[in-house]
Amino acid sequence: MRCMRRGRQSTSAWTRAALIATAVAVTVAGWVAPASARDVPARVLAAAAAATDREQSYRMSVRVGIDLGGSKLAMQGDGVAARAPTRASLTMSTDALGISGSMDMIIIGSVAYYRFPPSAGFKLPPGKQWVRLDLATIASLSGSTRDLAEQLSNSNLSNPTQTYGDTVGDAKKVRKIADERLHGTRAAHYRAVFDFSKSFDEVASQLGTLDPTAEFRSAGLVKKLRKVPGDAWVDAPGRLVRLRFTLPIGGLPNIPFGASEALDTQLWDFGVPVSVDAPPADQTIDFLELFPPKS
Image (tube, rainbow, N blue to C red; front, side, top):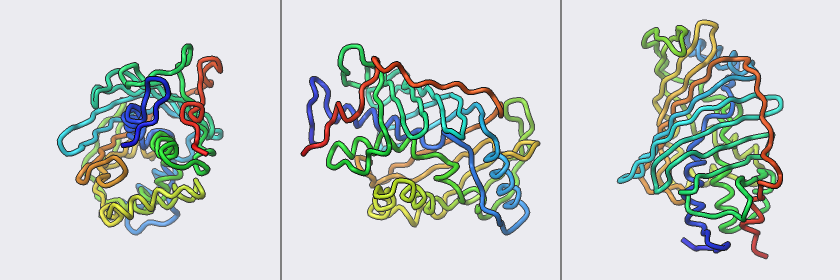
C-alpha cells in the first residue's frame, strides 16, 4: 500500500482506523419498508419497519464481528440517534488490529466527526482531537485520499432508513421463531432471507458519482448479497427493534476474499431527547487538511 506521510502518520494507520469506522454499518437510523409484502410474516416485518421509520429518536447498540480469514475483529458500541435533521452520537470499543480503546463518532446532517484512540497509530496536530469529514466532498476526490475518505464515510452512509430501504420489508422465507424479551419488553423473533444487493444501489444514488456497487460487483459479491439469512425482532407496539445478519465482504478494497461482517443492531427507548453538538472548532481538523488531494 502506498504511504503518504503527514508528520509521523501514514495511510496504513488511517486504513486500520477506517476499518473500525467502516464496521459501524447499521447504527444511525431506523428501517423503512416498501408498501407491499407477500405473506403474513413478511407483512409483519414490512409494517414493523415502517413503524420504526416513523420514530424520530431512540437509543441504540451495535455489535460487530469481522472475520478476515485468520484474524477477527470484535467491536461493540452504544449511542443515541435522531432524524429530521440527522444527528447521532456513538462510542465504539475494540481491541483488535492493533487498536484498543474507544472510537467516538458524531454525525450532524452530512458531516461526521471522528475521535480515534491513541493506539490507532497516527498523530494529529497539537490540540486537535477530532477529524471532520464532509461527505459532500468525497465525490470530487481522487487517489488514496478518496480511498481513505470512502472507508471512513462508509459508517455514515449506512443509514438503514435509506441504505436498507427495501431489504427488511421485502424479506423472503419469513417465519416466526419465538417470543422473547428485549430491554424489558416482549419482542417476536423472526428468521428470514434478505436481499442486500439492492441496498448498495441506494447508496450510490445518495452519493451521485460515488458508486460502491461497482466494488461489490467487481468482487463477485452481488449474487451472495441476494440471499443473506438473518433475524429480526418486532416489539409489542409493532416496531422493528433488532436486526442481525452476516454480510460477505471479501474482495472489497483492503479486505481479503472469504471475509465476512456480522452485525447486530438494537433500538429502544423511542422518543428519547437527543442533544448532539459538533466538537469545539479549535479541537477539530478537516480530513482534507490531513490528506489534501494531489493536484
